[in-house]
Length: 266
Length: 313
Image (cartoon, rainbow over all chains, first blue to last red; front, side):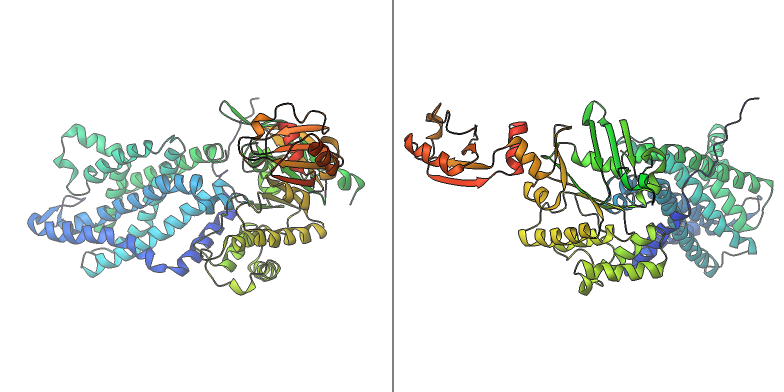
């Protein structure tokens, strides 16, 4: 009989990761205003593109083909994109810098805390912060009259799922980075996703081959997930989106947990 | 405690090696550190002291050889070993976003202590390092000596079995150095095992029961400061300084004056058991140094003898 070697997927971090969240709470006690900054980016996009540009555009076809105002079309997509951007910034550039160059993190590594604990804790904190931004954005959507279905509340866990998926894959990608130049590649992937994932215009405006390409990329799934929830027309495709993002996040974690110590303890 | 536990070394290294790609930072070194001992690595910058300390601290994997710490293997038991170490790194790594007291509180939390325990120990430790009145201040405005004392307090929050101190007083002014030495001396009195690196021979003499001299990734000698001085140097040294340009003209003039002669760029060192005798003999030969200093041998002389170079260059 062959012994099946099972490497547990969550051989990654421990409860000690919570200490990192505790540290961040202590830090933000001194300057909690800083935390507000991340809230404004999607809000400014919503005001300028959603409502400004939206006045020129009028209605567009929603997820079920029914026309919806452009602001309602673009708002959940902006929430999805900002969840992605926040997660990627945190998990690539910042994450690499903190663990390799930040003295504070170097000192934490001399305690029982492992690189995995620190990463998981920072990931958790980034998700908490992302969740706060998502709540803020949700309130804005409701205030501007964009709430048509109670399902819109589910965009909050949806945004967290997007953040988790991108942060985990971002950390996994970072574990293969050899120099700062490599990080430029990340922007090369993120920017087209931001622009073409059905974020600002419906996917069927693209040529069929491009549509197919977009449909395999993760932000498309994030955008469509939040849009179907915000408009309140969920279907089997919603589950596909959830499954895609969940598998992506777990795969990212599985990779990074195998590479982290080798990468960071020199 | 069993006899075994009391006699087995706390740190045991055989052929311990650290390589970074083609560069060998630590080259097959052997050493043992016993419980309650103050053990030093003395050597110039780049000798491999910090790499050795980082391997002991389980933040840098070993490249070869054997290393056991507190009877555990750093390859598998990193977190368990680190739980019982207190680390004072060479450069301050305090959390600048937090206050003095918060630095201690959160550090205790990393070790899994309860909040009440952290608070109790933080107050005791701030008292111990004489920073009790600075608890609510941010870290940044503290002086170098205060930061170093806070780092020492932080490393004690888990009541460690072993303290690892990498260049504990480098960059501090003399008064701050003595304050740090005093605290470390008290810890030693309490039975805490100290492992430290230094390139200051006075620090090694003040604090270390036993030390190894490191040079170019290898250990070149081992013993107590007194043993090393007896083995590798004479009781006294006469230092001669000449007016500029004179020393170069004195080839062969020192032959037979002392047991050993070292010619440094700025002075000549004459090793003998009685330095005054050397000074008189030199005067008889018609040598007229501008200044003469007779002193006892130090670890600096041991290092010079072993490597042909000064410790601090």
